[in-house]
Image (cartoon, rainbow, N blue to C red; front, side, top):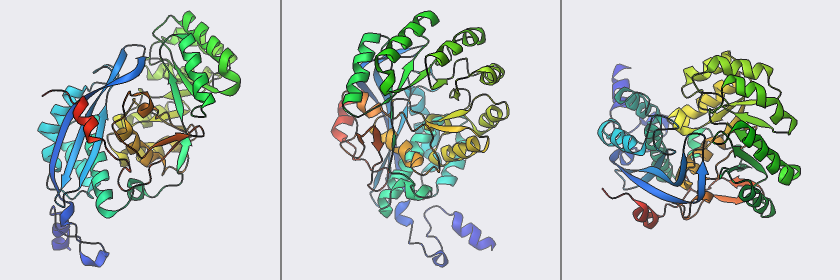
Length: 397
C-alpha cells in the first residue's frame, strides 16, 4: 500500500494499470511561459473606481512532454484596483513562484497542482487560475476531451448572456442596448453605477429602462461605491424602476452592512467582491449578505475551486451568477467549461468580453446568438487561439 502510494505520487509516472487508464508520461508539464497583452476595447468601460480603453491580460502557455500546448488567461481591470493583483504582479508570481511548482507534474493532477501552488503563493488567485486553465486545456487536448468532461460533464451547451452598459453616456448606452436586442445577441443588461452621483445614476438608469425596459431585464452594479446610508436611500428607487438585481452596493469589507441591506431590500443583492475564498463565501452565506453569488476564476483561483464555490453558495440557498472581468475568448472559455457543468445557473453569465475587444484572442469556438453564449465544443477549452493576435498585442519585454 505504501509503495503504491509513493508510486502514484511520482510526477510523470504512469497510473497503475488496474485503474484502466492510459500511460500519462506524455502529459508531464515541461514548460510554463507567460506574457502580458494590452488589447484595445471598442468603447470606454467605466467602473466606480477606474475607467479603461484597453484590457490587459496575462496569457499562460503550458507545454507538455507530448508537445501539446495549453492556454490560460488572467484578467484584471485597470491594474490592482478591482483586486490586489495587476498583470505585472501576476506575471511575476507565475514566472518566479507558480511555474516551478507545477513543472514536472502530470497535467491531469489538477488537485496536486492546486496544492503546490497554494504552498508557493498566498492568494494570487488570477495567476493560479491562469495556470489551472492551461492545464485543463492541455490535458483535454491530449485526451481528446472537452474540459467540461474533466469537471463532471456538461449539463447545458448554452446560457443566457448579459451585456454591460458602462460608458456612462445614457444616449450611447440606449443605442447600444437597442442594437443588441435587434441582433438577438443580448436581452439582459447590467448597468454600471458609482462613477456618477447617486441621483445622476438614478436618472440614467430610469432613462435606459424607459427606452428598453419592456424588452430587457436590467441589473445594476454599484461596484462598492455606496455607503450603507446611500444604499438604504436608493435601493427602494431601483426596486420601483423594476431593477432585477443589485450587485455589491457597499465595500467588500462591509459584510455586516451587506447583511443588513439584504434583509431590508426588495431587490436581491449579488455578492461579488465581498467573497473570494470559500471561507469568505461561508461567512457571506452565514451572514445572509446576499441571495445571489457571482462566480469568477479571478476569485476562486481554479476551475474545480470555482465549482466548489458554486456548491457552497447553493448550499446556503444563494442563486448563481456567471461573473466576468472582461476576459477574452480564452478566459471566457475556461469559465464556460465550469458553468456548463453546474446543475443550476439561475442568472446565466455576463461573459461578453470577447465581444467588447476590438480583436479577440481566439479565432473560433465561442458563439453568440439567440440571446445566449454557446459553449465551445472542441477538446480542452475548445477555442482556437490566434497566435498572430497574441504577438501583435504582446507588451514589449
